[in-house]
Each structure stands twice: as C-alpha cells, then as structure tokens.
Image 1 (cartoon, rainbow, N blue to C red):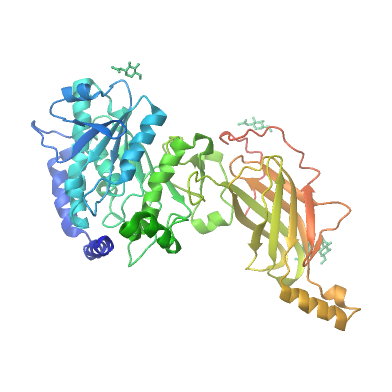
Image 2: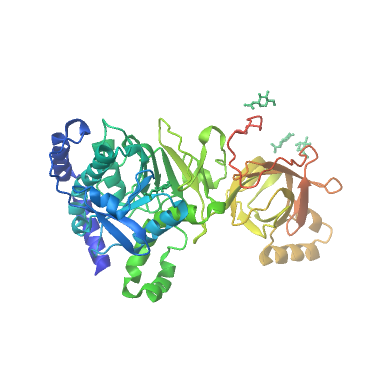
Length: 510
Ligand SMILES: *[C@@H]1O[C@H](CO)[C@@H](O)[C@H](O)[C@H]1NC(C)=O
Ligand SMILES: *[C@@H]1O[C@H](CO)[C@@H](O)[C@H](O)[C@H]1NC(C)=O
Ligand SMILES: *[C@@H]1O[C@H](CO)[C@@H](O)[C@H](O)[C@H]1NC(C)=O
Ligand SMILES: *[C@@H]1O[C@H](CO)[C@@H](O)[C@H](O)[C@H]1NC(C)=O
C-alpha cells in the first residue's frame, strides 16, 4: 500500500509540477509577513509540537506560549540548540531515525539542547498538501526561536536546524521568517525534497540566504518520470553529492530481499527510502566516527569527479561532510563530490592515478591491475579497463577509492591482464610463426605514474626501475618505485585537514 501511495503522490506532485496553485497560496502567506519579519500577535497557535529530547526515549513537550515549560523541561540557555525536523510521512508515524539522530547528537555533543519538531498531523497528507504546510511549520519554528530570543535573550545564532526531505525546506522557511533579526546559525538540509521545489526561486525553497551557513547532502536525485525524490540543484553554501548524489551503494534493488526479510512488508518501502535516508546516516556517521570524517571535493560534475581530476583542496575546494564541516560562507554554492562505502563508517580514501603512455603505435584498450604498497597498508588488486583506448602519447587519469589509509606510498605494481583468449591467440601465433611471435605480442610503454591522495593532498610519482625498461607486454607484471626526484616527504600528517597548502605543487592542465 505504501509504495502505491508513494507513487500516487509522486504522480500527483508531477501533475501539479508547475506548482502554480501552491505557489499562489504560499505567496499570500509571505505577503502578510511583509519583509519576512514575524510580527505575530499573541496568542500564536502553533500547528507543530516541539519536544526537548532528554535521553533514551524521554522527551518533554515545549509550549512556546508558556516558556516556563522550557526551564522545567531542562532547556539550558547557555548551550546551543539543535532542532530536528522530519519530512513527509506516509504512515503518520515518527520515523525511527529521528530519535536516533537526537541520541547521537546528545551523546556526542553533550552540552546541547536537542529539540524535535513533530508536524506529523500536517505531514501525513497527500504530498502536495504536505508541501503547502511547510511554510506554516517553518513559521512555527521561527516563532519558537523568537520567543526564546525575547524571553531568554537566547541568540538565534546559536540554533542549528537539521531538516530531512520536506523538513529541509521547512528549516529554510524558518530562516526566511527570521530575516531582519539575527540569522539562524546553521541549517543542514538532508536530501531536501525535490518535487515542487526543484527550479523554484530561492524564497520558495531552502537557500543559502536562510542562515549564516547552510549545508546540504543530496543522496537520491535519481530521476524517474521526470522528477527525483531529492532536489538536484544546489541549495546551500556547500552541497554534497555522495556517489554522484543520484543513488547510493547498498540501496540497489538486488538487496530488496534482504530488506524484506529485515523489515517485513515494509521492505519495499525501505528500499525506496534507502537512498533518500542515506543523507541522515551520513550525517550521523560524522558524529559517530570522528576519526573517519568523509572528505568531499569540489567538481563540475560527477563524470569529471570519477576521472579523478577534482581532488584539490586549495581555496576551500574540499570540505568535511557532516557535523564538522568548515563553515566558510561563499558567494556561490559549491558542489562537492565524494565516494562512500555502502555502510557505516562510510568513509573512503580517494586517489587520483595519472598514467603517461608513450609512443603507442597500435590503439589498445588494456585491462590493467594495479596494487599500491604504502607504509601502513597494501591496497590489494585494483582493476581498471581503459575503454577509450590508448594511442600516441596520452595521459590517462582516473579515480580509485579504498576503505583504508595506505600511509605514505612506496611502491606500485602494474600488470597488464591477459584474457585466456589473448593467451591462446598469442601462443598459436608463436607456434605458427616462431620467428615473429615476439613482435606480435602487444606492448605498451608507460612513462611516469603519479598518484595523488585526496585526503592528505600528497602526490607521489612512480617510475619504472632503471634496469628494467618502460615497456610492458601483455600478461606481464611490472614494479614501479618512487622516481628519483620524488624524495619521500616526512611532513605527512595523518588525518589532518589539508587546509593551507602552499601552492607550489605543480598545476596540471587537462
Ligand atoms: C548548563 O550547561 C552548562 C554547560 O554548558 C553547565 O555548566 C550548567 O551547569 C548548565 N546549567 C544547568 C541549569 O544545568
Ligand atoms: C618516441 O618516438 C620518437 C620517434 O617517433 C622518438 O624520437 C622518441 O625517442 C620515442 N620516445 C621514447 C620515450 O622512446
Ligand atoms: C611522443 O612524444 C615524444 C616526445 O616526448 C615524441 O618524440 C613522439 O614523436 C611522440 N609520439 C607520438 C606518437 O606522438
Ligand atoms: C610558499 O612557499 C614559498 C617558497 O617556496 C614562499 O616564498 C611563500 O611565502 C609560501 N607561501 C605561503 C602562503 O606560505
């Protein structure tokens, strides 16, 4: 039933894609709040319920009209405030991640007030109706924050709103209602909803203007029937697109049976939700695995990213995904890409490989196997096929990800994989033409291989060993060592933020 409902609602959303009616009614709401500043006469009736998280499953309901409830609930006005806001609800139940997020925040940040917005009564409607309610809920949050400011002199700046799906846009609306007073400190959008928000003007969705700092994690922007569950466009100062943002590893439909056995009938819905909710788990991961913070890199798009050419940290081009992001306000949204594992901890280490091929006379499309030896770990075999082929002098670049830190890179092994077919052809050739066999065996000449580690920004160049020419034959293994001019650097700091790089590192052109 749930899936049908999801599809129906998405179709309705699609139908109303122009969103004119909805925009009209939302616009009239804005109109009465001229300038965006709340000028509400008491009593203000909130349609949302706010609960202060106490621990375990205990919460205490806050009444913005009776602010003494804040004190009796244990709200500590010297501490920051985090407000978690859920999204559209198919079944009218609070999703389990909300409480898990609250627990994770509270246990890792300790001196923090964690509040959960409950707008289930409005969220449990057809999608377009739930969308219409997002401004109302945003206003409820803005009102709570203003009451805090008025009664407790609690600065709005100390608030961090975390919203999932529709909750992301709600948080944005809360921020826009507060314009004119201080801005909210931070808004984090976890896969902000796409339908009815994609392509809208910044005032009609989450945008960088809504807080001092806005970050967003996009995890399910795979388009079906012309619309995607998560918004594709950048809506923040930093927009993260893990694994390209369209879909997430471990969420594919092959795993549907696992999900069904784990969650019962809801398995199918879980599968649908898997990639959307991944944004939530990536954020929690940043709190739970402090020593495995995922790094993301600015790139024009995912296809450039998988070519490995974006692992650059200069001028704030890279940032940490999740709670510990560096809060750099930028004039324009920055799109950041990264690869992740399919489960927690999600962190992967990114390596760019660049290989020079020299004087290749016949076009070849080799399948290569690399392995890297570092001071800490070995990579194991890494397979890569160069489908576009090699001809003449070419430099080929690609991205490799590993779930372990290799340490300083010392040695690289390269082998040109030979298929059984090749081996047969070639053995036959040798037996038919014993004198010409040597020449017919495909060859390539590899110049320098350079490897750049995104996480440390270290660049290592490998050369073939001297007594051993640069030629590689099909089926052959070859060992590359650090080039003579590439002296080992001992400045490497583990897990350090590659922040202030002196940009004497050579710039390569593509
Ligand atoms: C509020 O939190 C601070 C720590 O940030 C703590 O020192 C103080 O005792 C707390 N106040 C109350 C009333 O619990
Ligand atoms: C590549 O071929 C050119 C001639 O075509 C030759 O001059 C050059 O030395 C060759 N390069 C290498 C590295 O063998
Ligand atoms: C490759 O570059 C070398 C110089 O490094 C040049 O001599 C050679 O002719 C080039 N080969 C081809 C096929 O372009
Ligand atoms: C970068 O290094 C050069 C010397 O290699 C030095 O002159 C320059 O001041 C350095 N820049 C920064 C920003 O550290």
